[in-house]
Amino acid sequence: MAHDVLAAARALRDELDAAGHQSWSRAIDDAIAGGSTGTEILMRLRSVLTRIAGAVHEDSPMTATRARAIETEVTGILTGSR
Image (cartoon, rainbow, N blue to C red; front, side, top):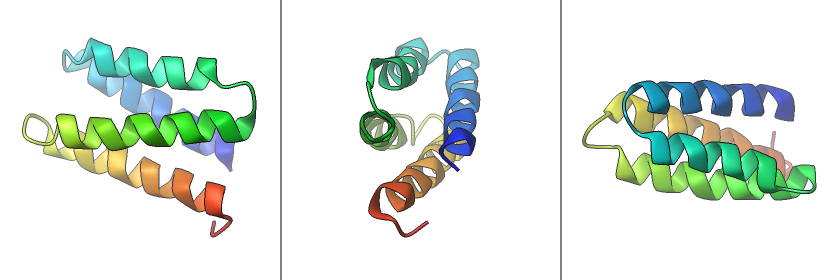
């Protein structure tokens, strides 16, 4: 479950990097690498995804939509509704 979310986040990271949003791609890497537990990683990732969705919406609406979709999935895992 969480592995799929991390794979999706890494794919989003690559997409952001290719689109010239290196600071956001690094933020995803930092969120994943900076957590010491699975829950901490997901909480950090959710925060970053929320900020990404808002920041890139005008430049890359599809990327923002993907970030929101992953964030929704992460929230589901954290709240036990997934």
